[in-house]
Amino acid sequence: MEKFIPVVVIKELGETDKILKALKNNDINCAEITFRTACAAEAIKYAAENYPDMSIGAGTVINAAQCEAALAAGATFIVSPGLSVDVAKICNQRNIPYYPGCVTPTEIMMALDLGITTVKFFPANIYGGLKALKALSAPFPQVKFIPTGGVDRSNIDEFLAFDKVAAIGGSFFVKESLEKMANEQA
Image 1: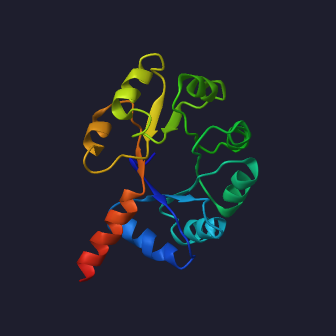
Image 2: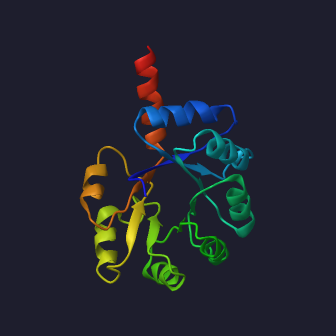
Image 3: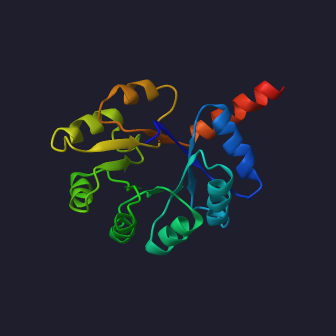
């Protein structure tokens, strides 16, 4: 698993190259393309075909139909804002990593029952941040977290220093990468 998982919202297919090139230019070889837009599946397919050296996943997957569409497009991992049993089952059957959003002990226990040991902690800033992750890690030592939402340059090092953090998710990686590329071209 990559240490950084950029949350990528592609509104028009033409944005895909610019965003993925900027991420690669910033030494990030992963993209979670969200299912928030009409062109999400098409963008995932394009990214998977044209950036085979990158780990291309689908984010904001909230049901089985979206999961099927993402996998058919070539997604190699699935991320959800919450936990979907249907999505978990599809991913398990196909041996695809699934990172559901889990912020309560009950949700984490449900994920564990489904064989999931790495969960998205979203929105991290609203649900207690690093302090909450440390508290949740005590009863769930086998669980790793991907904090997303409210993680940025001001606190990323603190999160990364915690051994229960598998990766950091966030849209700020995209913004930083695009700004860096623009500055280099200026």
